[in-house]
Length: 417
Ligand code: UTP
Image 1 (spheres, helix red, strand yellow):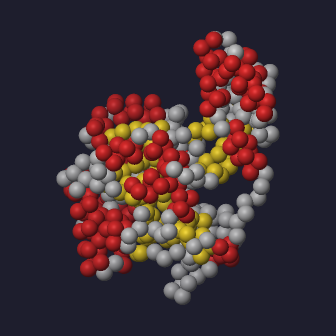
Image 2 (cartoon, rainbow, N blue to C red):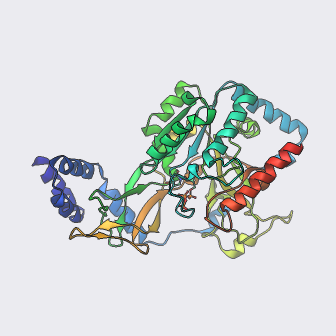
Image 3 (tube, protein in one colour):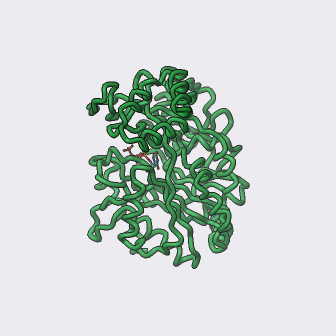
């Protein structure tokens, strides 16, 4: 009774009484208690604030955006390359590198039934994306003669299926004690009136809190503690859906150490001013990524003295952070961005509504917003054909077909060398 009173007061205070109706519909006593407990974990003030923010235009001032300097990996002198390589190689061989793969996304555009990493890329070998990623880590393990811990971020929705897939395939031959899974955080979804939704089963409707949720999840789930216990100093963080990702890169580590920065990101040249990618920049003097929706066509077309795009270093979600930076960022709250999505839900009268068009907001943090809390980062330009083969859409650009071709071309080129 005490708990119910507390929950009733909270729901009334924050104008979320539809949750009390949902509570009344639950028959099972244990489930009733669980529902109340869940409500008590929600930060209603924050959710209401996030909803109110959906109505505000983002205050973005182009004046505060400036180009950022970068290092072109292919243009390093032999001496520079060898110096950075040696520093990074030593760090890797000392077991100070860990890899995190973010695999908590919904992969809605690909439309695969299951976690994106389980998708068969359509190679003759029929390897899944997860197996392709494991191959890269196995190769690095052989090369540097060291175990590289691999942490895979999943979501509430796909964690069990992901773990099951790895177990069924015996971790594709990677040492099992080097692979761990952790779940990213979630936030309630709200309708266009700011009401928290109840899902088809009568629970609070939640969605993953975006790839920027990784930092707080690393802290919350004890992963950072585990990394520290293993003497990890550098962590490569990448998405699950780039089948040419090179997570073990001594040059990237070497430059970061030499330039005394706590983070680095790989970039590729933006294909054209209109390509729909975010680009590295300086925002209010801090390293950042500006999205293609945020810069004007004029700014997107600006060129420097060398005739290159001023804002031409595309962010490809291949970043590396020092453990100190992860700890610092994980304690802060990155800003949330709204996404308007289709969400099935149970209405006030208890009827399940199947959404056929976007009807609800989910809130996501973006990993690259973390750069702004650092004074400087290294941006290292790499070759698109060597390091970027994304699997995003079912067909057309960035699809399995394009990624498969890039993957095959890269490996044929490697074989010939
Ligand atoms: P995307 O932004 O491409 O999203 O994620 P997605 O969920 O994979 O695909 P769509 O937009 O629904 O089609 C880029 C990377 O970030 C991870 C994804 O798994 C992917 O590796 N990600 C994204 C998370 O781990 N968690 C999230 O909440 C969002």
